Image 1 (tube, rainbow over the protein chains, first blue to last red):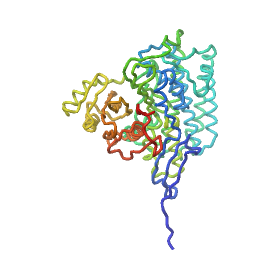
Image 2 (image 1 turned 30 degrees about the horizontal axis):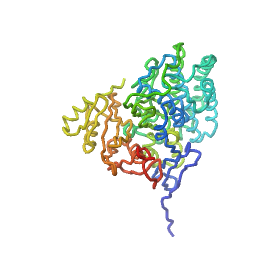
Image 3 (image 1 turned 120 degrees about the vertical axis):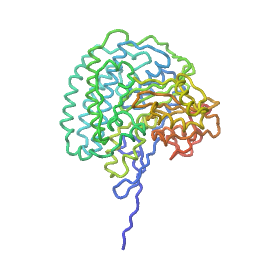
Image 4 (image 1 turned 90 degrees about the vertical axis):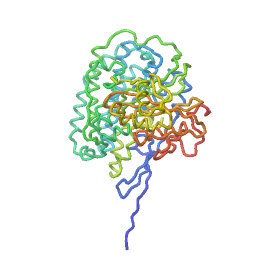
Length: 367
Length: 146
């Protein structure tokens, strides 16, 4: 008697704890090996681009909070910079510094979750992520001090920020920035040479340099593949040209490099915040901007380096109070273009690790 | 600092290769005719002067008379960028050649435009709706969709 075998199709998600939201993959398996994979999107589609066409330029800011909800400040910043370019609005110095501090804190916040969740997926269940959440909590306290919110801040406005930093903010930030490098050392001690992490992620899910560029990957995913590309350096927006920092890159483009790039980036973020605090000026926190912004007829493609990669807005204005066309470059979605190439040939357990190492946020994938 | 290439200058260079390809050019963008899109894109990607190896973004806008497909190209080696456009005057069955063969990154971007704006990309390996479900009526980002 012969035993017959055949490929086996399973549905991975949409409601699965390691899909980081409602992501679904149709996976074809041969035993444990992944033969084929087809991602299915759209479970969190809210039509934000269409909704934005009926809102004022300030009214869109709460919508941008809900794109990548783990990095709402960065989304606010990207939107405000786009509107400022379109309408020619100037931003006061103090607001620029506040924005950079907030954006870098947000990067720390997002990378902490990314690394924590990645380790959770790769088998170090719950311990590392609880360490990471401990620090994220401190950042959220800082954000709460400024905006009163802990997840969707709605804090930045075209022309500045919604409110000035309260007195207690800077001392609290000082305290946090002093502590953070020691926490990062602690993570390194726990993880950098951790047997489980190395075994699960070294050489797994390799994304070659050529494919990373060709498939428009951005952010830590692109840098881990060895491309030294960071919009903060390549096309400095806001006041990023005033700070000294390095762009960490990987060499192999595997899961471990993506993890490492994020860890190293966190140190650079701390460096930027330290410099920004030293130069922090006094003065206005918001320029005088009309309640209803009517940018002149035109279009703009404005991009920033968000924690997950290049976040950009393409806005077409017909000089009315709402945009004519509002397009969001969903970083997380585009980083998933090469997902199949990274996963096929690996086992199911690796699938989860590779997927976790890309660090996506479903709010931004489906919009 | 990323240099924004002037559309008129780039248009001149394109015209020297493909004299009839340019529909319009301004300082901000180059508009090419749809039938020349693939050739122009290939030229921009492979020419050493431009070396547009990275497709930042791709989207479309509805202007009632025509659809405009907008490409944001950049070169990671030379650090410059360009806005490339093409216009599609057909409303019932608009079609534009797919650039997936040049930049794999266009795969999901084109699917998104197809889904929400209803522009078909000929030559796309897997063109189907992405965020809405199969069988959904209409294309929400069109201006005549209510």
